Image (tube, rainbow, N blue to C red; front, side, top):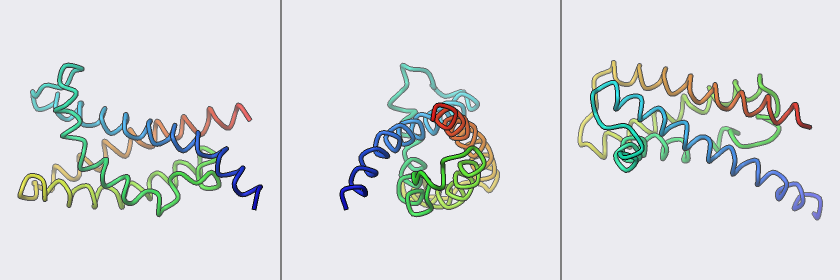
Length: 139
């Protein structure tokens, strides 16, 4: 029992780092999207960017833990991280899209979801794979 508690503590810093990075990555995604539509996207618009990102952050937080996105065994190597992140994003983008539709009162054109899925997937997989590579090379 003591070893399990110790392992939980050791992994919690890693989980917090992953979670923080995920939020930043989704904020970057939202800022890119806002900028591409001529909307405010810089540091002065952090509140607006957070509002834009929030449905997908919520979707990520609801679905990704269930799919192993923070478990050391499924995120320990770059390949495992890439696979887990891609699977988790598939569920998160659906959940985030539903949350967004509730927020704005309608669904968007399919092109929005295709671009959202692809762009955020690349950003999330890129940052998380780099994280796995960097943390693996330190151990």
